[in-house]
Image: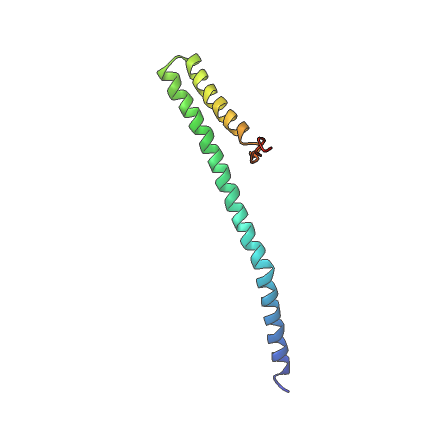
Length: 99
């Protein structure tokens, strides 16, 4: 009976450790991944913007500014058309010549 308080304390500590492993540790891990994802996404957007600026500057020195604007605008237009075509998934065609 002398070790009863120690056993109760150990049981409570074990219970608290299990609860923490099921809640706080999982949430901390999720927050860590979300934070890393936000940082990576931010760096990717900044890199894309700097790449577009660099591409325009290279084109601007190679050709007239109007042609550089036309090339960059044409690239964005082609990208926009491709994304516009992908916005709605294609449905399988039904055979209309049954009859």
